Image (cartoon, rainbow, N blue to C red; front, side, top):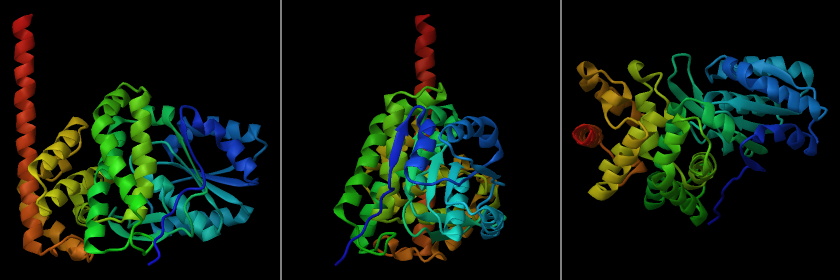
Length: 382
């Protein structure tokens, strides 16, 4: 049976990497780039990028991303772009801006170059275009004809972004080991519609191992706005390894739950990686993984400030019972009940969500007691 994976044409990572954008475009023969980014990136990053493009002899046009990746937004931006016969689209920013840029490139039938300014998810390397509606609810997905022509990751810029985004990237990536393994175990196909190559499973496992080893240290560095070697390792894992690994290995319950989470208004502005982080904990509970594996995952999530409870995800306790029932309905309505073995029933999924919530609450209490004990010891010594 044929097996398939996809990779970006080029991957460049490091401090100051965006200065290579003009040269990358020019060497590929592109002369009329269209750059899409939001207002914040326009103010903080676009001036230096525009200067770099100009120094490479390229006259780039810039369009503003409004904030939501919808079919209507993509169509409107593509209509504006058609006036100038651009030969490449450059997406700069976070996940939704990048997916909108991908949608434009697909509509215009030109290549896409991706320049993430936050490492909040693994969208940069993939063909997937995740679509939402105007209420921020997950609507569906489309696909580029091939993976991005180039991905340029400036870790100096990544380290200046709020640490919450960096943590969300860890949350989005941490599940891939378990999701790829579940896809293989249940005989499911990957994003390319084929069984996974072993390489995809190796990348998904390497992603997890890297995050467990370096995730907490990298998060602390980004809190101090420093780009050190731990940050470089984690960015490589959350952007490159995770991105290639999930496309080649496949997704499962941790990501399936985001359809349910995004159906709850109180969670509409929760970051994708924050939802996946709690979804990963639920998946491990559903799979009845050994307690040591669950504890290792929870420890990392807590260390980087990711949610391990429904309340941490943003769900008010007074509304949690009704909301969990809706999350289960919306998740299973996405036809993911057979993505784990044995197949999920509504009752089994709801039980797992509540058990994951209790596990997370217990871990937070333990950390709180440990922190208080440490503070008391310091006070006694002083």
